[in-house]
Length: 368
Ligand code: ADP
Ligand code: MG
Image (tube, rainbow, N blue to C red; front, side):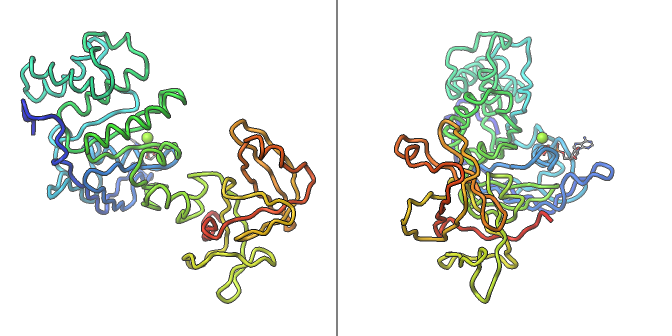
């Protein structure tokens, strides 16, 4: 697998991952429940779910640190379930970085090469190359203890990719960083992935992080994958209420079906031929998809009428809370540009909100 002297990180070796019927229990806890998952070759796939949903367990099954009770894992054509972690060709980034504090930056990065019998001079050369890739050129001689959190995270990443793994696994790699650095690193991780072309599986509980970085997102709940889709699809067409709530803000308004039409109270919904799941009984309304209509303004879409209950200024936007006649509430997120601020209604005003047909998503209530 190690090819000394070869051009670094050829993307030709990226492998697809096939997970079939993987189950893992700890006593009575079912951490993974008959999981099927296909990761495409060269894809950036994120496992997204709440704490305890089974994300780390699934990643550890891929890495070889956890042996499932049953099921199969293939990298390309190869069944790897009985293969030790170091023989799987996977690079791994842990939440805690797990760097060796007594080794220099370069020695940390070169460690996987040393394990694989690469000569020291070659290993050091490749460690420097990996450092440049993670935007830390020339820091090889430093002590790990002297690095900031963001720099340590990059060193851990460099160590994970230095031996040209066919698969890169990351468990909440950015969770120890503060918000600004985390958002910056999300974009950097994505860029690095695009340059290397390594099949990547990343775990996070942060929906925005998943939406920012991924080709596809697998939403996991109670050890089951409940939706696997592209970010836009997950956000705009969540398969269940759980997914809808987990990936963003939304109100859920009960709808009534009559023949082929759906009604919100007495208002017919404008769906323009969108597919509606069987048994759908809720309209998902994301705040930023609502438009505040000016007086007398006609709307293309469903019009929701109510009275303003509260206005919350949040800097980049304004949240307008609206009470509907039926007793429910929806929030509309309005941009905070000067013109929009001037046109804001006051608390108590009657308002109409427009929801474009393409932004109307019906789903079935699975939270009951
Ligand atoms: P996540 O990474 O999504 O937070 P985990 O995969 O760590 O979730 O855990 C899934 C479930 O399995 C949790 O209920 C957790 O308590 C349990 N679990 C994980 N590892 C072990 C273990 N080594 N022993 C016992 N229970 C475990
Ligand atoms: Mg975890």
